Image (cartoon, rainbow, N blue to C red):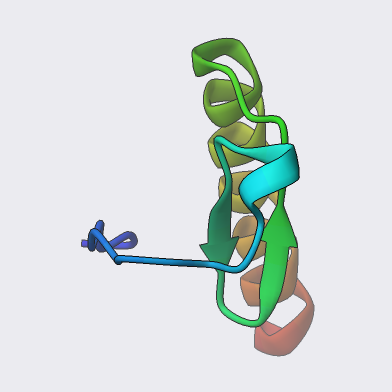
Length: 55
């Protein structure tokens, strides 16, 4: 799979929770809609990266 979901105790983002980390980037004040949008953006970014590296 392209994504792995792991739960963690703390992201040191109490004031801006709920939060999630993708690789080294922290995303704060997340909603289900924001998560869906972020996943779509990450998939598109991966597709572009793959296309650029095939050339």
